[in-house]
Length: 81
Image 1 (tube, one colour):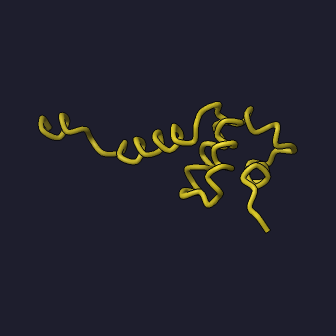
Image 2 (tube, rainbow, N blue to C red):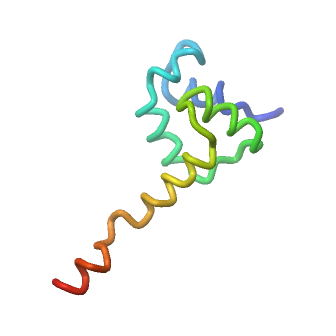
């Protein structure tokens, strides 16, 4: 059985329909962060990212990558504190 991110995310978020997902972006975003790494085919991740967020999947991954270190102080702060 193939995994379907659209149906899975609908169930995780508690939506009645897949068409509700773009209106619940924050909840989808939090679920994506919770599930990393996502185990779905790349093509499906691209379609999902465009459908829900309107951007390429690479953009989503870039943002998540940048957020990984956000809990550490910046170099400038480390050198002056």
